[in-house]
Image (cartoon, rainbow, N blue to C red; front, side):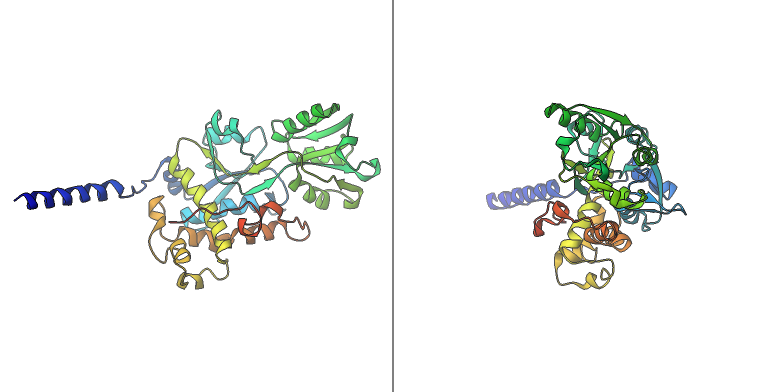
Length: 343
């Protein structure tokens, strides 16, 4: 009798463990529900920054940030084209996200403590690392930042770049006159027209303006060095954990796809891979998507829509910009891009 009672107790104990460790499945949160209902993701992007987000003459958007939007749309709706892009200035972007005008920001936005806490936002893994950079007219003969004392500098208001410049010049005991303009096109035009001596922004944004907006690109010089840390990431509202999970894991899926050799071209073939990491990511085995409220093919759909992270980078920073990946390489190649385990 005593043995029977002990056996029953062990069965009950084991059952409790199983129940206690059973992973909870996500129900649709408010953002996912709204997106499914409207059949479209609303993505806040830059007004116009080459490599990140720029619209052509027909209004078609392209860029790394745009591709992230497409990947999320594909994961959620099965179609990377179901995205409405809302171009936002540096001051407009946070109220637009907080008010629900956009579902996510994929807009050259730096993760900072204040933005992550006081603004009520959550940020996913960095999708790009850069830092404050400066472009000047070659005829000024300036070759380094220490020669910018007294310069007029064109910069976006409310940006981390604006604060970085103020701190940098103060630390060097130099003076400068900020020329703050919210509209991206007007800011670059002001520099090209000579209203300021220097154009300052994330350094990764400068090659595009030099290449496409200057009458003679060789008349302008991008100074060596970056003068801040700018980890750029997708931002979402902090009141919807499921939506945060979705945007975060889509980015990790793109990182892992590059690490595991999954491309836009071979993603179908890779479903039959012998690597369990690959088949699990692509939904050929298991169902990771169910845990975040998506279908089995969520990661497959994202990769099919835009390719892996390396393909996204090359498509937007290849010729003629030719921006070296640097720290934006995978961790396996000496960079900082690191996909979390997909289990």
